Image 1 (spheres, rainbow, N blue to C red):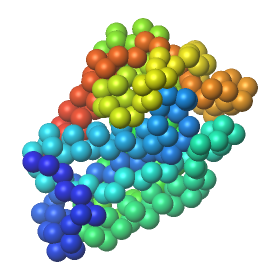
Image 2 (cartoon, rainbow, N blue to C red):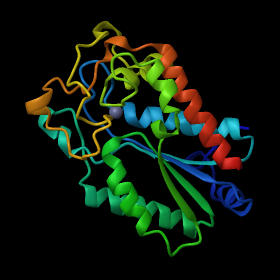
Image 3 (tube, helix red, strand yellow):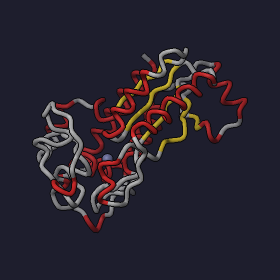
Length: 245
Ligand SMILES: [Zn+2]
């Protein structure tokens, strides 16, 4: 059973979905530089693919909200090709859409995130949604994937997501249309020993001008469609299981 895009429905059908207890899925991403080889909307398109796939897999009616194409990406602004919401703006956007889902009668909203910079604002927004009857959840799709299996197929980045590295480039190869083929394999970026996606527990923002002026964190040179398929398949299957569980 496919998901139902609420922006393609009229109000009575949306009200029926809410009244029937359909969960709502909302893909959020970014429009930001992803090295020279991935499209700037990669994070939204990958999160949207997870939502659409999970809605199909779940076998129940699922409401799909229009994906959010902007995220908190200030750290990439120095490299251009980036449109960013300030973190406080993103918190407000997320909380307001969640509030609207509550008013519309939905009892569950799962925000499916495709961009690491959205995690902090996403969790902060959750704190503003507790008063409503709608249960709001936030998940970054790559955290739904078994880490050991991803590592086994990720020789260069060890299963770390990074930015436009092995995992994201693999997903682009799997989904199609998200990579600039003539520029693959792209040059390696900053190694993931201490950057995003690494086991280092200390959080900090990338400093691309100092660390990786090409805008890549990780090494996309080992990317394979097989790794991309694993990431998408597991994320879709586990999100679908949560929707029905
Ligand atoms: Zn990305």
